[in-house]
Length: 333
Image (cartoon, rainbow, N blue to C red; front, side, top):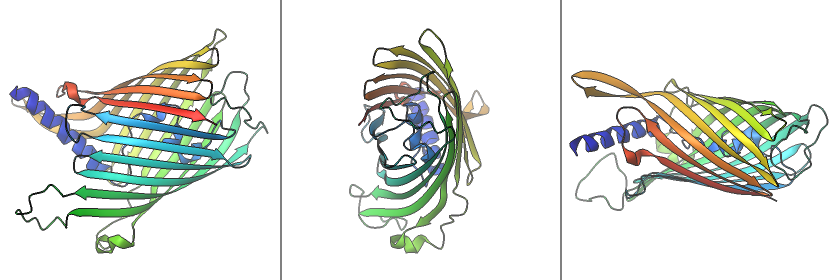
């Protein structure tokens, strides 16, 4: 029993370390693999879209623990003109007494390199398509951090805490570029290109350094089409956080099967992060880096998409409650 609680504290410390290092943006796991690269790349807003698209996702952890971490994500995309798309992201992230709420408004401009404009409601390419696009995206975001102190013991005075509720809001600006084709696609984004406290955080403006909060993301996918209705898509994602010199790699593989009125897919993703936490084992100090593996299931059927992920932490120090469940559903209008 003691070993179990020790493992639980280790995992909690590792997740807290990840959250502290991720100030300025909502931490993402593998949500982008639910056919929604827009959640991490502003230039991917409205890709493979002829009208409008709505997608909702819900991420939960530790179902049997009160105030466990959780995230709700809503994205809306709209193709305003042949070359212009608009997007909105609404994100609610909570972890115990802490919560983050953010809204991003995105504008995307698309250049068709072969004059082939996407004009079907189908949200995914096939081997018969001829797609060659260069896209640029800009996002303006507002991120609010909140510490709920309503249940704290008022008899204990902590000078670092404010009144009943402590709130901070920051404005952020993201930019990206993407190349999308029938086979090869690549994306590059810089998040928190500027990250500044809003006016109500004036007391923090002198100590807040907004110059090195940049978050770089680069990803690429290659889709292989077979004549028997099967597709194979290897991909990767690289992330770099400038402030903490933190790096992470995602290695992904998805297999698609074409079915009447849609397609079904299975996939697997492996992430390794440079964040580590030290612990002692048999008198030896070991530094365990954050690693996880995520099996993926998804379905495109007519105008709908659904997907489910389960993310499990890897390493010697682990507990059964440490998994992340992510479910998403979307519709193309």
